[in-house]
Image 1: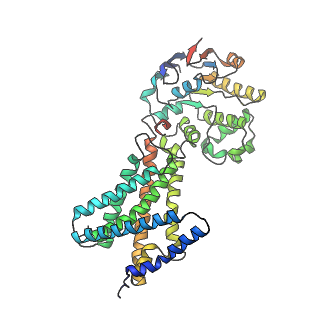
Image 2: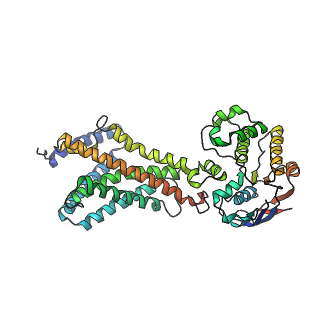
Length: 199
Length: 262
């Protein structure tokens, strides 16, 4: 499903207008504080803003906000956790999908029985990705998903996302790493300071 | 049974204790004698004024005067609830405190006056005003703890709340853990009060009645009624305030609007 973003802006960044075709990955690079996270949060409808988003021919405004966020999942750079153990953050009815994805992302199964404080930054980042992916969103908004990962785990994450892309989901991937943007992005844009996107 | 009467002279003898306190403060350089003096004078002046005011109101049988006094007491409680949290909602914390404090005190006071206590007329100031006073004390406690729990902790819980929103949870589900925790904390004082009643402490109302010469079993009946009313009112105030405060931080797109909190 194709993503259309038109005139998305708030007081911090924008306006942003671009299109990402179905099954494609838009890679966005740029300096810290240039507005990349703000853009992803606006697409996910987490901050108040102006502008219009259409996905697969459906106007975002016609959907209830929780419905939209199930369709368009944001995985933030700093993940949030609301329960004590790791396992409690995953719905029990998606256990099979969780197991296979955890294995693919090199997360040890024993981690799920522990408390969330015991998970390292890199583990939390991959856990947050598992949590988002098993809900099967059609649009994936990734904010630096491999920032605290070693090269092996980074490759595992890139492979998992590449599989989803091949299955037809649309991805917006924010990264500091120009080489990663080159590898993963079908289209690449650069965010200049002040929140202006350029080719 | 005739209540023992208390004279000004008797109270003056009790005040020797305060003089001893002040002497200790001066002798040991504790430096609280000034504050003690001011507080003691305030206490006496305020209570004597309230005594005369209540005597006047009780004698007047004017429902309007009773209503004005109840409203004034409620508004002071609203202010206390609103200033307790460090954080301020845009538009003022009183927006949340006002409907909950006033609504709950009127609801519980009318309920008790029309069912359990049943004075004639039901709005008789002699019953209505002391009841409203003691209810407001508990409501103030519960509402201010619940409001502080939500407003002062929501910023720390931002990542946890938004993580759930990002997965498509409703605002209500995502904020439920914080709201529930705030309500539970607000219920602690009143639950403690019930659990300790009679074993660890003799509640104030009952003590006052016993000293004034009432039969212990009669005093206990009133105390049980009061504790039930206080608990009921505290729970309603805590629930209303916590949900009310949280709903101020939500918009029509179910976003967490921390920009509405200063």
